[in-house]
Image (tube, rainbow, N blue to C red):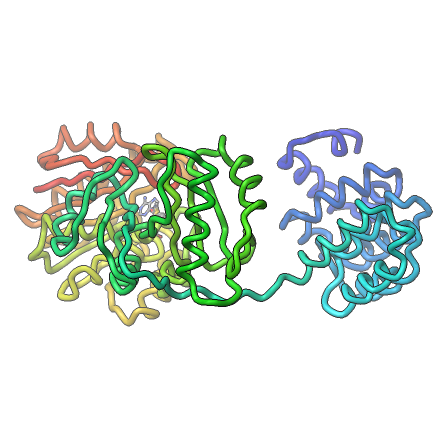
Length: 484
Ligand SMILES: C[S@@+](CC[C@H](N)C(=O)[O-])C[C@H]1O[C@@H](n2cnc3c(N)ncnc32)[C@H](O)[C@@H]1O
């Protein structure tokens, strides 16, 4: 018990909790009532999904123990009890909390109580705090009001467009893809920057068209450029305030370099705007400070990010769909006449779907060792109305032949699996590619386990045409373009 309370490692804590769960009646009462630290530990644990499951599986014991905490004479324990109820509420606990709106005598606990209430009950507690404001310390009163606002977020309008006459924007995509996408942007006046591709003289309609491209992570409008951070923020946010409709819109601001975060947050508090509020939890405009010859302030619309609506099913290892689209555009550039395309590690089907979106005339074959992946791929394919021949099998048993193309996001052996598992998998893959691709057929293989694949391809009768560097999800990956 002592180790459990003292350990900072969440994994060890959960292991202990699993152990306690076997004998919850014995351990949880001790955990909850022995001292303040126990209530604190439980308040932290109720933030965790697994701990919640365990506690809810013995709901009555959990409820009775938290009720005891609410009845504690120690205000700090009651405060943690409110946090626990906020993290893991049940009907019985909520009904008891409602009584505390008028019963709780220690003002220090009211901010936490506010966060565990909803709707009209929050209003009731705020009303009580207003009536008793003179007796409440100003800092606590301010916290009660802040938590009221957090528990009852303001409804903002959704910004769907910008109103400007002419402006510039920046396309953010993979560096290795910039030369490909530039070929597609012949109509625009453009220039490569370190951070992306700058597009000049655009209209609001151009903004919408470019922002909806599937092969870019975002298209942001340039709001201001200045060597001075304060000026950049002031000019940029005021310009943004002018080009959104009149109304009540929310934005979130982020910085490319976290070192300037606090300076930015401090400065924006001093800028008064008519249509815009900074609301990091609930916003429709993303603003970013980029360091590029001084500072650049840019903005993008969240509504333009809703491009991959078919993708209701995904797994932790699923590829970012924009990255998948970029890979598929590159594949189409190398292999425009491909007819039969397979992904032997299809997961939830993202690569196959994006490939067909790039070239509607292809037919798709997908396989994966995991049954769950295949069933999720089926759902996603159905969502977009595409057909594919799907099967559940190890790449070692992959039997398809006459393929014009094999395109895959391979297992990396990092977060899932291992490098030694990969050796076997990649060896089988290369062997299958040698057999199943038609002469001149291509394989597009995306992985972070680069050396292994490079070496295996070197000793096969496949030719490495190119290796392109990607950065995605914090990993340095490569797209191997291989030809038989
Ligand atoms: C990086 S994920 C691909 C994710 C996929 N692109 C998506 O967006 O969902 C790798 C996939 O390889 C599959 N896999 C791992 N070992 C395999 C094997 N020996 N044969 C076939 N598939 C395998 C995993 O089940 C996983 O779905």
